[in-house]
Amino acid sequence: MTHTHSFDYVIIGAGLIGLYTALELERLGWRGIILEQRANPSPSKDSLIAPRSLATASPRVLAINPATIDGLMEVGISEEQLHQQGSDFTGMEVWDREWSGHLSFDANGLIIENHRLEALLMARVVERGIPIRWSVQIRDSKVTEDAAW
Image 1 (cartoon, rainbow, N blue to C red):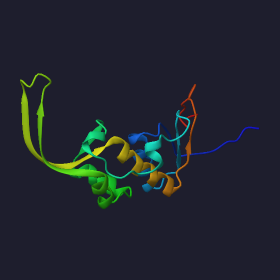
Image 2: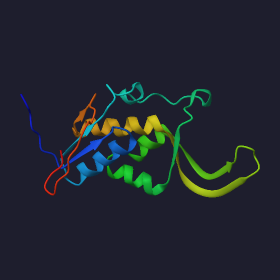
Image 3: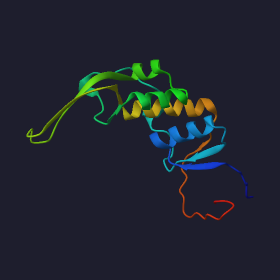
Image 4: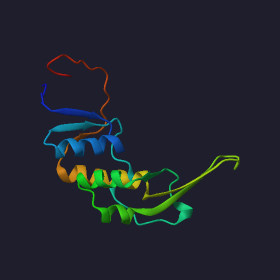
């Protein structure tokens, strides 16, 4: 038996960009679905964990600026949630691998581990009832003037 569903959009991938995009489109009144190749959410997406020490912190982080924070707040992630999961910064200093080059500048924002932001987005997607189908592989697609499948 074949089931047919109609959506305004289909997002391939339940990572940071896919989750955020689904929330933004849902905020605009669109109805859609997220398709993800992985079998189920990674453990880091299942729950937010307490802050960790620097010794156990993930090396994969994002430095997000005030405009990005505003965008996250528009899709329902509170500033309080972001500050509970990340750390504020007021400046940046960057060196190259050989320590021969150095860049320093003032900037305001938040450093947050990728998996923590992903967990916040996942929780919001679930809360909003946006469907996610796990273990899905896209083998083919077709786009016409009227539809895509």
